[in-house]
Length: 346
Figure 1 (cartoon, helix red, strand yellow):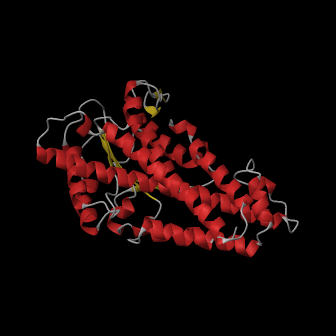
Figure 2 (cartoon, rainbow, N blue to C red):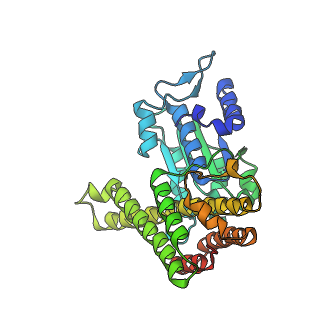
Figure 3 (cartoon, helix red, strand yellow):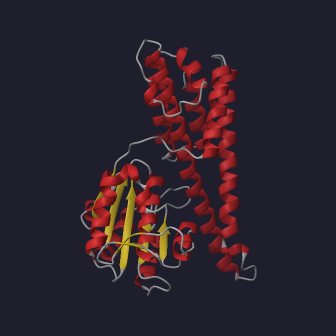
């Protein structure tokens, strides 16, 4: 995606492009919003604009958007551009450790190998450990030339004030239709169908739980297969033992981080569907809500909404919110999901 594709974020994107046009791009940005995946896409679009081989240019000749199709843009999309670096929370601890920050700072000090700008993107920057955040301050304050650092967070209140003060903040508001991938939408339709056909019994709840757990297991397998295929472990079989062990640890951390991100997307889709259930429950009281539905094509939602009171439907939304909070702690994930699903009123 290019910057022009973010039509729901027109105001913030316009501010960003105005800085590009004036040649006054900041060295450090804090992107905040409601969805990490959208913030990642925006950071990727900016990285492509800075390093595009055939950019869209303003009247003064400065690049204000990417072509979204050249070799550089494709590399950034695929995550294998040598001068665009990504840092994410690692392993089950869901933190960004000081060693990750030190390695990123070292990479940023090196000369660009194939692009005009070096770009660093820190995903879920609110997960920076305090010592990691403090270690990062000098890099943020005195970055090397021709480099841009982008921090992404949906919880800016968790960031140290010293980090926030060194960045230009852009807030990307939520809005527009909910964007759910085809595979997640297909799963959601199946989940809604099972919910609509089930009666209020313990067995019916466990059927729904099985639907969700199967989907999550499938996603983990997909993530593991995709990241393993890109790992140097697959290309350098003769590497030294110590190097292989480091790569294995990095792969495990990357799989866990990406799986948790995808799990969050699936649970967010479930929460948006439960919002539709609530809207249908209001419709039974004569309130017109059709224009507000996220998934109007899922007819099974109306069946569920017709038998759930608005009060219980709101409770469902609170249950999923609580479940997501539990999953951001050290609780056993499957247990948290089981407890949450069994509390739903469907």
